Amino acid sequence: MKLTLTLVLGLIAIGIAAAQEVAPKHEIGLTLGGLLSAQRNGGTTRLDLGSGVALQANYGYRFLGNNTAALYGEVHFLANALREVSSTDRTLTRDAATIFLTPGLRVKFFPNRSVAPYLAVGGGWAVYEQSTATLNGSPNPASRLVNHAALDYGGGVDVKFWRFVGLRAEVRDFYAGGPSYNTTVIHGGQHNVVAGGGLVLKFR
Image 1: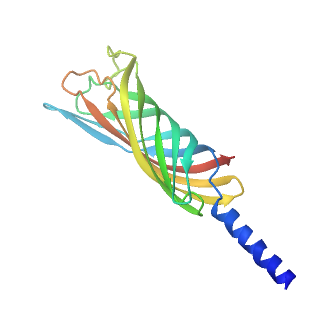
Image 2 (image 1 turned 180 degrees about the vertical axis):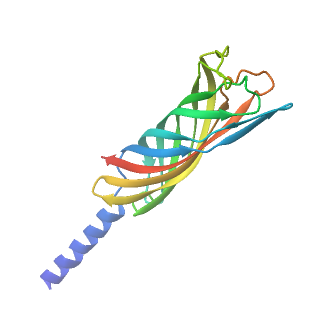
């Protein structure tokens, strides 16, 4: 009888401990993505901004949560070395590089399960570096660097893999002013959509 009672109490204690388990507080995501191509139009001028490789790093800190949902503060960094411009207007900027740095918030659902989807939103800074030459090979009179405010939103999913290492897949859109294309007819914000995946490291 005592043995049975001990086993029952032990199972209850294990159940309570499992129910109170919380997700790790710190997360570092390292992902490789692809920026999708985009079209810009202004007057009679049209250009295509090509796709590009996106190197991304993300740090997240869990402020609060339970088994159903958890709230994280995050800082997301994206770097792209080259996106080529194509257009019939040969006076436009030939290519541009991109950096986004956007702190924000992330809500993760069922953070203790093997598969945990999440939504994220943030805002911060975008910088573009324009090429020194135009499409026709002439020196580019556009600014070498331009800065804009940026809005970041998207979602993804984390999958448990091994111990403190997980897998991550996500899609984000960085909405910001565009590069200096060396024209006044194309201006305003543009969508920079990136899809990617990689690893997420989790720590208590």
